[in-house]
Length: 404
Image 1 (spheres, rainbow, N blue to C red):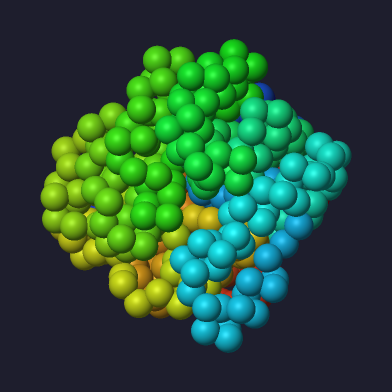
Image 2: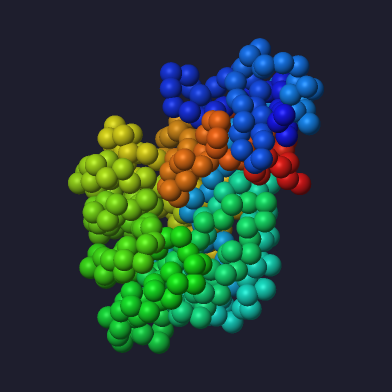
């Protein structure tokens, strides 16, 4: 007998195929022991619903999708950067603010000063914005400590968020140059690769290593040195690439078989081809593009033509994307980047899962996968990218359990 059966539902399975969204109208889905035990058309159920499951939940024609996957965030940090928002409105650029001591480094100071409990408490509030719009899996990065003690503190705090939501943790040591290493970049890069990566791997507090490959961040050579250490210690690779300029980071990510390359506004044809060959997911972050008032669009049409999987994420962070609404990220992916609503939803389900190395576990409604579901009061799946601020979520299901 199944634990729970949802009936009178329409299913957007997000399984690729001939039908948009992998749709199964008038469908049903069942969970047992936290896994999807049955999925199909209601007419094909092998008996009366009440005899098949301990609990039967009637959806009144609602749509069920996989739980949303926010595969790129920076949820754990101290303070905020609202003053920098004002400065940008007065004409200062992101790079000018960063070079003047603002930007990431200002968040580093606040994060170093915060206790782990304070970091957890503030991150929980931001996470609530994601979960109330259907997120069941979230990735969050460190990178606001830039010393081993604080990076560990951030990653440990991120681990405490994993209550009713799946959390993947990423070490982002090459995020910015800390003030104490202002005159010795090489020493900091060596510290990250030779000390921080091994310690973090040994502590088991991270699943992957990321870096900010950019003119105001780190060079390809510096990133490659750290990536070699990450791979040596069994950690996956992700990369902030081609956000503000073309540093050929996407091709670097592809050479190291990275899970994803993220941002990609300045991605060139060579980078697209390299990502396609290596199966690297393109994680598109439209809220950062919007918030920084950028004008250079990522090459979505070229990524599509090359068959590069495209994920969508909020990039929730204090400086460039203070967004805690995955549904708004879907809308921005469509309106700003010209993705289709189906591509956008796939980007926050199936392809978001792929960007975290979880494609076999979540992201589609298939038997054997985790029973992470989102039940929506909508008439068609495109409404998830269409409405702005509407309360669409009927219920969120994590590992087969309906979450409050």
